[in-house]
Amino acid sequence: MIRSKKVVVVMPAYQAETTVSKTVRDIPEGLADEIVLVDDASTDSTVEIAKTLGLTVIVHPRNSGYGANQKTCYKTALEHGADIVIMIHPDYQYDSRLAPHLVSFIADGYFDIMLGTRIRTRRETLQGGMPFYKYFSNRFLTLFENILLGQNISDFHTGYRAYSRRVLETIPWEKNSDDFVFDTQFLVQAVFFGFKIAEIPVPVRYMPEASSINFRRSVKYGLQTLQTLIQFWLHRLRIRPYPLFLNPRRMRGQD
Image (cartoon, rainbow, N blue to C red; front, side):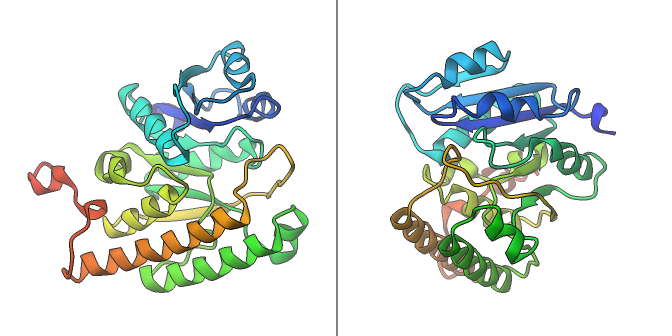
């Protein structure tokens, strides 16, 4: 079923020269019709290496942020006719070999969004290198999100994700933050618009080369996550509208 769909892998990249080749090499042959790498003004050799790998490479002239990088990724994937888009970070933190399992559930029509969860057991996650404070904050925020959003997701904050084209054409992700909270906003929007979300476990790999935000930015991210949840309920209760949950196509009756 996968081969009846055009699959585009997108890679939001920054300073990934030591890991991008390993990440691409692990993507199963024949899975992706195209691999798009968007470089967010790296100062290393990420772009040059990506070109030698035969990837479609787009370079931001200045560092615009993780969310802005994803916006370029998804815009490009849609323009190139993707039916399914899977995001794989080129820092080798997530196992690319599991990508077919994410894609197949969408290709077969079971779910709209697939996530690769890093949280199967506490021991595995911590042994994989996730700092304890990140694990604790992940557990707290994910529990809070599940309660407020009516979901049962084990890892709301994974960066390993696959989306159907319909998801990307419905959710107004262009209005999201250019920072790391983009990911949270996207899943909260997905719940708001009624998309089906599922997940599979993936081994966690933390290493010096893997991208990660520091404690200060983690706190900021956590506060922005809570803010997004508040906005979700204020909008849902029609107390105050937020652009994150307004779909111009639906407003015009085109969906």
